[in-house]
Length: 119
Length: 111
Image 1: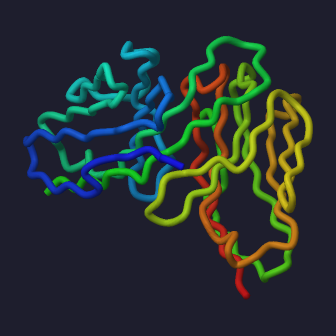
Image 2 (image 1 turned 90 degrees about the horizontal axis):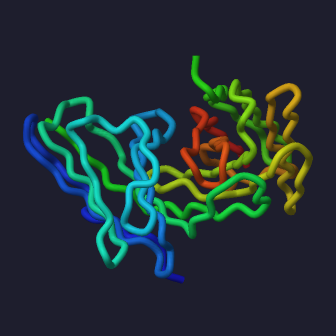
């Protein structure tokens, strides 16, 4: 079965440079999520998109932006990179389901991650 | 204080042992409670989830949620070396909306 695809898998950048991470969700999934996981830390939710519109925003720095395109793939753009941005960046996709009272969870499927190293 | 607290371990047990992993949380609005397993250098994968309170069993795994105590648990029976991974609890108020993770507990099951 097709999984979430992330590219690149590894990225090395210098401070103050920019980086673009790409995510290709599972076919027919309409929601994409981005997470940042620092070394030894839990994944921190950054931002999500549903049907190409931003649906939720977490702890995403102002230096970062993201969008979802018509083919549902998403890109995370990171500017003015700092040493502290070095982390594993995960993308996840799911079928959306909003609202309370739903007992069936639409599972988030995670990609393999992009390891960003800022030197 | 974080919304979701989880003892990071590490936890080391012999093969065949019963493992108990726990998380506490502060947001009483959480309704969905998930357990993810993450192998090194891989993305988290969903093990089990529970909606609201109660127990759920799937093979060797049992998830429990006690909303009155804001406490969730994952039990692994007859643990195997292949269970060695980091286990993350996660929870959300609405289905898939702004999921909050615990720090993850690193588990090692020794043959």
